[in-house]
Image 1 (tube, rainbow, N blue to C red):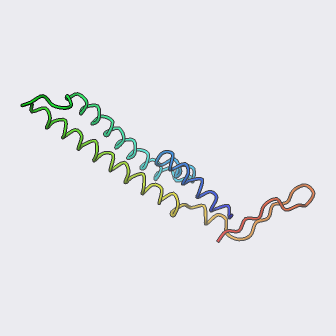
Image 2 (image 1 turned 135 degrees about the vertical axis):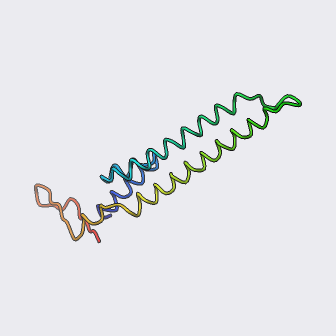
Image 3 (image 1 turned 45 degrees about the horizontal axis):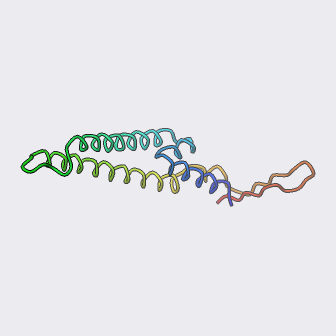
Length: 125
């Protein structure tokens, strides 16, 4: 497997753990910062909305208006989780397709050990 491909898979793996980490591994700090901030913001909003929804009783007592507030906070939580999922997916595609490492490894590269045995062959396109 070409070294550029290995680095892309490494970036995808780290981006799967948390959005933006793979971009930092590819030395793309500005994109990584954007994904990390967006992912953290949406995940934080989802946790906050979940905690706010838990303040209202479930199931609601008869005739209570608080049920509507719980439903509103639940909608905010679901929307925030959906936005986090969107950032997560775009982040993974970005780490896989738009990395810079393929440009640095063009051509054939051989590595030889102390006795002349070939340790690795990397071919980049």
